[in-house]
Length: 62
Image 1: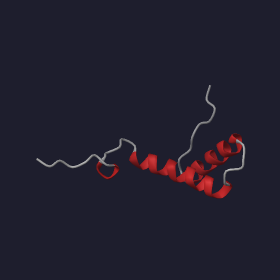
Image 2: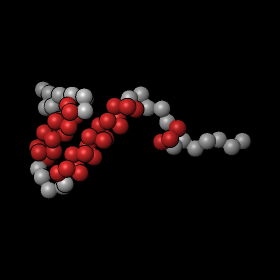
Image 3: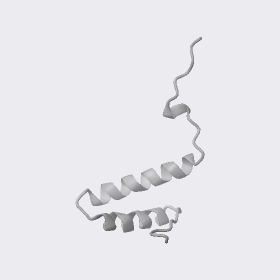
């Protein structure tokens, strides 16, 4: 019996839409800033990017 391989195309993620939004935001930040800044710059830029696409986040929660 032939079975279908388990690939990303046929997986069902619980938060698929959110996952793609976050990955897209990370990609956008990297495209905009490159890879020469400190982590704190990326941290702030990603929080702004997520907010702009309607996915607010909490940062440095204690």
